[in-house]
Every structure is written in structure tokens, then in C-alpha cells.
Amino acid sequence: MKVAALYGQKDLRIEDRPVPEPGPNQLVVKIAYVGICGTDVEFYQSGRVPAELPMVLGHENVGTVTAVGEGITEYKIGDLLLLGPPTACEQMCPSCKRGETNICINGFPNTAGIGGPDGGYAAYYLVRDVAHTMLIKVPEGVDPKDAVLFDVICVSLHGIRKSKFKFGDDVVVSGTGSIGLSAIQFLKAAGANRIIVLGTSDGKEPILKEYGADYFINAKTTEKIGETIRDILGKSVGADVVFECAGHTPSLKNLIYECVRPGGQVMVIGTIGETLEIVPSSFSIFEPDIDFSFVYTPDEVQIYLDMLNAGKIRFPGMVTDIISLDDAVVKGLDRKDKSGQIKILIDPSM
Ligand SMILES: [Zn+2]
Ligand SMILES: [Zn+2]
Figure (cartoon, rainbow, N blue to C red):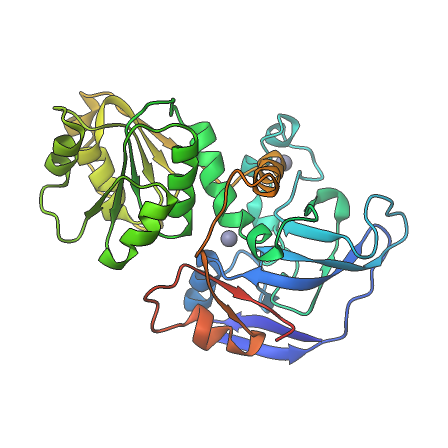
């Protein structure tokens, strides 16, 4: 079978490997789609992963069970499954005991395709530890192309559920990628009063409107972001809750300094890997809560699938390209022309 394995910085190799056979308590899944995540791009560009290289990337997977190991009763051949991060560590750490598996101290890096075993940039995927892998059955009416978006969409879902957002709040969402778009839709569904979106490209306004944004501010070209927000809100202060979904330090700085009202909340959902210089005393007098959100729990993935199946949420235009494993670098991890791209999926059968 074909796999794409990362060997180092900008070194992704297409290889032919034997199709895995399931041992006891293992499953083999034929990958239908695997999402290309920002994390994958980061791994490819830096050559640094929390594991030994080579490693097959891919942690946003959906596929059909093709072989079932001894001792498995919960899953059968033909089941369509989502394959995500660990549901709980074997040691059952205090976080896992509380059901907060997203902040397990033994870590998200045990996820296949991130730091654990090989991931889904492959025709087939071996679930090595069924008991500790997020495996969620996809309901019949759900398109696998929508189901596979769980990784980005549930990141948003978790951040909003963890936030202090309440019906009728004014909100700012910074970021117009897949996480920002999902946040806009959830906040709209949850009854936000006014949804103001900060982004850096103008071409996305139609899709932002479609997802529920009321106002768009180009953060690159607008000089006085805070003033613009206060004008929109007709208030002398910023929004009640602001969500960082861009994963950029300038975006977080804007949210803290310009966008949140005194006593409001800044919820950081995006992953920010750069240094942020801030002067706490310049905003601490307004007592904003600055809070963080990390990935999601299995319950939240189930909520996503249930709501999708019931037609209560939908994500049109989110998948912007479907590519082959052979094109994983040129049309995916190292794509030069990213304009108009939101989520790119790999279909290993192509
Ligand atoms: Zn991801
Ligand atoms: Zn744990």
C-alpha cells in the first residue's frame, strides 16, 4: 500500500508498505479521507515532530473498517469511523479521570500521526490500541468529507463551550480559516448578538457572511481596530467575548488591547508558537480573563456528528481541494498558491 512518511525537514517520501494486519484488540481501517492540518504543515516545514522519524503523518482521519483483530466486539467490518486523538491514557491520569482527555498529562502527542504511531497519510491505517483511540462511528446520513472536518470544527466547539459566551453577547472572532469559520457558525447558532470578524484577506467576505458573520474588519489595512469595533457596537467599550482563531501573535495582541470590553474574556483557540510581548499592567486594570482552549473530547466529537446528522450545522465550501497522496507536498504541505484554500483533504485512493 502507498504511504507518505516524513523523514525530516521538507522530506516527505511516498513508499510502498505491506497492508497492516490487526493483532488482538486492533483494527485496520481503509482511509477514505485524511485532512491536511496546520500541524502537519508545521512538521513538514520544520522537520520536528514529538516522535522518532520517519513517521506517517495524518491525524484527521475517516475510513472504513476492513479487518478486525481478536477480542474486538464493538466494531465490525464495514463500519465508517472517525479516528482521532487518544480518548484516555493507559495510566488514567487525573485529567483523564475527570473526562478532560484533551488535557491528559501524558498527552496529545500520543496521537497517531502527531507523535505516536503512524497516521493516516496512507491507504490503510492500523488502530494499535482500540481502547485508547478516539473511534467514533459516523452516522449513515453524514458525508465522510464533512465528518473528517471534526478535528478543526471540534477545536472551535470546545473553545466556545469552555468560554463565558452567553446568548446575546457581542463577539469578535479573529481568523477566517476553518477554525474561525466554525466558530462563527457556532456563535451564530448559539445566539450571538453581533459577530465581528477580523481577518487579513478581503476575498472571504461572502463565505464569512454565509457562515453568520455580521461585520468584517481587515486587520491588515484597518488602522484603528478598537475604534472600528466600538463604532460598530455603538458602545464605548469592546466585545464581551473575543476568540483568537488565527494562531497569530498580532491577532492575540489586538484582541487583548483593542477588542475586549473591561471584564470580558479573550479565549485563545488558535495555536500560537511565537513570542508575544505584552505589558500586563496596561490592560490588567480592566480585568479581562485570558483563557486557553486545547483540542476537544470524544463527547464533543459526538455532538458535532449528531448536529451534522440532524442538519443543524453545515459547512459548505470548507473543503476546497481533494488531492492524491502523490500530491501531498505540492498541492498540500508546500502549496505555493494558497489563495481561496480553506481545508485540503487527501484521498489515498486517487
Ligand atoms: Zn488537526
Ligand atoms: Zn491521561
